[in-house]
Image (cartoon, rainbow, N blue to C red; front, top):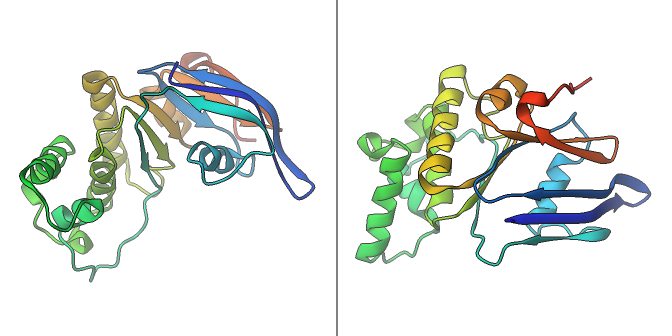
Length: 215
């Protein structure tokens, strides 16, 4: 078990977001977190990232978990001066030893950005920028990654490239994936399991069996 959630409840003032939700994620699983807007998907992720404290219940990651996080695509101004490589390296020490430099290069290669690492982030396409965010998340060698609407606003080709990379990370490094998305066709293509959050409850199952919608 890489994550176990028990009776998790969250309220804001008098509004209950969800109550007594329970689920487990196995190491190496690929799970889509689905549900209509406003049902608490972002709230749940913020709790798991320890940015919010739940009203009740608990959750526990395995002792060896190293969590990576890729946010929704954020537009970067065309004048943004940093190169892709410098952007990826932002969270590393200012004075980089040989090992840090090697890790940066490895992750640039893993996300297929090594050939364009010296172009400015402002000149990169949306898909290239999002893969740079992914490379940032991979620097700490996580064994679980949360993709928070990471394919939203990307064109179909960029979505495909990103999800192929995620599949590669899962298969090569047995990385556990939790993918928050509204893109049901994409989830059905690339994810194996689902969590469906709606009306304050959560349902878990195999992605191929999912019959819910966003109405």
